Image: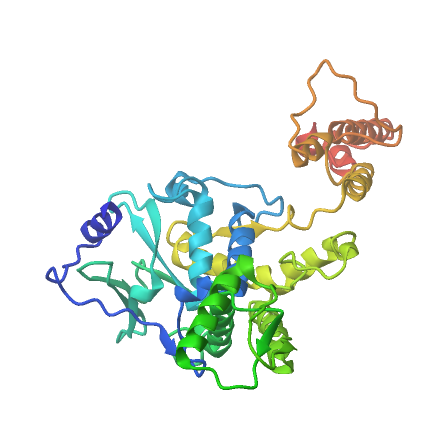
Length: 438
């Protein structure tokens, strides 16, 4: 693995001998008879929908680095932090890296980010995220922690985050209990529901695979020899074997034949309904509304209400995860380059209104002087207007340069009146608000 080799060389760690046994954590038996793990949880439809939806949304948010005390919030791209705004590592793009980091956070409750630094210049060289299922934690004497990472195959990396020193690993935790270093695994907490959902899917898969679901069957009063019963069974299998043959009527010969219709029992109907309830609760565990996941009961739901649903998803689901990621990057990476830098994920695209509403908002901002024409065009991914294009503006709208020129004219007028009144040049300039007497 090139990435593992680069990490081990940069951090000067000693690998364990080849062939060392790899024990993966995160296997939780359930009462449904199904063993659940973080990776296996992705096979559950509700878990896959919830976690990948959140990971995709956070990964595609626009990110920028800004100065902490900069009121203008101008984006910065420091060369020393190139992996944060360019490609983080040779194997992943920035969106892929952020998505895998958030997915680790949602399944294991923690993400382990390994920053690689240039020892000569102190610049950030690359960012990688470790597989949480192959990591174990240990508290250090100075209050920091150590992550022991066992990659697939053999070997072990020891990465430390010590107090007062540049960390070799940055841990992002979704939830943790007071005084406990290990994070709370969402999959472990939802193991029973995940196991129940997998049990339902297995039952349904077996029923569909066997396909024995006739609409009616004939029974007889007289006893049936085993060989005859076997023949009837083979005939039933030939008629109804496989999902495409379900629903046929079985016609069998014999004395005292009675036709019995087969319907779904109340217990079977409750099983189907319970499966849907488990699906919805699993989505709720990751705070994803079924409507946002595309599961709608009425066509009108996927319409005007999507803007409010997006706001709820941003406020209660995405924002807490984004803030944890921001805080970890600032504390574990940015502060070692410049303590005055901030890492911010923006929700503008997610919360954008309809084109009509967005145009009305931008019109108000233009009239109040809170934005410019070029910035509005940039929001729509349009190039700025060229110099030979005519721009029609209302009479009550002034550009910044026009306002500054009008202010200078007023100052010059006040300055001239003060001089005419016999006031000295320095005092007149001070009263007119002209710097350096000009």
